[in-house]
Image 1 (tube, rainbow, N blue to C red):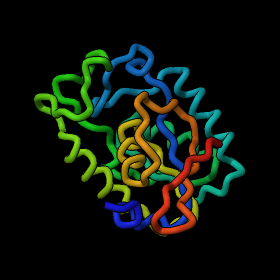
Image 2: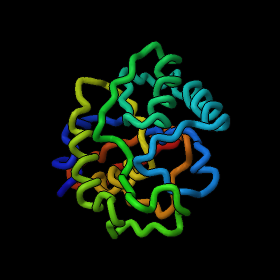
Image 3: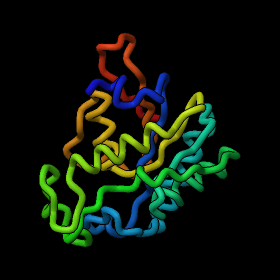
Image 4: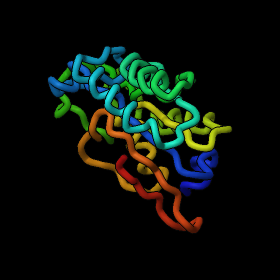
Length: 186
């Protein structure tokens, strides 16, 4: 599947933002589909990201339904004078029996009992991303797993470690249809 067929909605660049820090992040635990809130550091990170994004022309904000992403998105959207559109399919992968357990217990290529398979998660995430349209520069606020799916679909590579909390990244399409997308840190 090429990047163009996987995500036809992004005809131009967009910005991705992983939610702010949570206690599960700080403790190195798997949150997955568990609806955890931002900790105080996460709230500060969200405010900082909002300040970074003020001058970048974001005209729409889309978010995972999970509170950590929704609260990060709401903070940024308020600073930009925008509303948040929740896209349920952007929720983090369900890790089943591994949720709440140490991150090093996770193997991304396997399906834990009661969890989502990598293929199911990828298909769901891409379906959600295809719903984002009608914006010159959308901001997508979601999770490190969401970013892994994006990295694979856009041929930008999949990071081995989680991406930083609340670090805005501009995803830029290739100049030709057979090229790879690139990432610009904001």
